[in-house]
Length: 281
Ligand SMILES: [Zn+2]
Image (cartoon, rainbow, N blue to C red):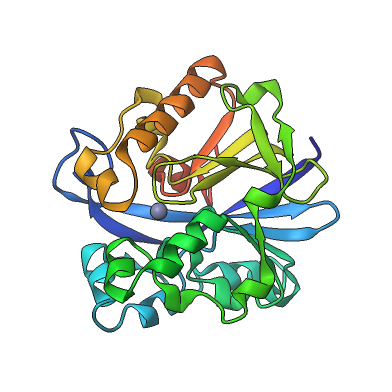
């Protein structure tokens, strides 16, 4: 696989009772960071994997019924923490970014889309179809905020489902095939079903870490993967499919047991967020 550099971006955080994210957790609210990933591709330039929170999220959840989303998971977004501001600070004009990859359509993953007006949007058709079927209240209850999607989305989408399927390097077993999004074998999208309809991760060869899988919300933390410890069924059933979510987490657990050196990054993992700004482990 061609090497890609990764730069994690901490794009705000929200508070959840811990028990909603891991079985046996406490009811105490805990901060869950939202980590988007900037990918530096040798030819395509900067590419964003998920956008994280953005001031647009606060606008989209200012009124009912969308405000229910923000009341359930209060958000903290310091000034300049949105992905577009961080891209600018790193010397990348958001208007020049040619690709944004969405693991799924939850509001905390798509809120910054408006800031990348020229990017192709790589995503799951299944996720977009599901979102299009929901009314405002039904969408909000499932963590979806259609108002965050750009008006010209349809013209800019490239679906994972349509990309050629290629074998994954053996390092990623038990995951064996990926969707070759750019056609050069550098970014392989992997379906990780269960969290919500159309939920995908990304396999890549990281210039710093070697083989790396961005697992998005297939697990809330590395700890959940190490222990194969899913959220309680009541939490997974609210957004997606519990049996599928558990099977996906179990597959990630088997990957971890088989290849503990392979880098895994869940979007909301406190351990990964804590590395940002330090030199990492
Ligand atoms: Zn999610």
